[in-house]
Amino acid sequence: MEEMKDAILEYVIEEYVEDEDEVMTYDTPLISGGIVDSFSMVSLKRFLEAKYKISIPDEKASPEAFDTVNKIVELVKEFIG
Image (cartoon, rainbow, N blue to C red; front, side, top):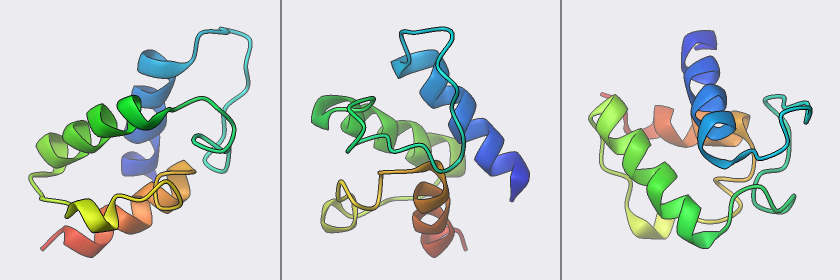
């Protein structure tokens, strides 16, 4: 599980964090904190689906479900077989 958290956090930092000095944790607000917007959320969803070979239904891909790395991991775990 830590490996999944680290992989998702690393992706978010690489793709969406502009300030190199910004400290990111598994609980950093991504959507409500303005780091990930709705367009970026779609690319994050695609990344998760490709990396973990899952399909996340659009109705489950809510801003609340994508707001922290910890919440994203919980969402992904729902769909891993």
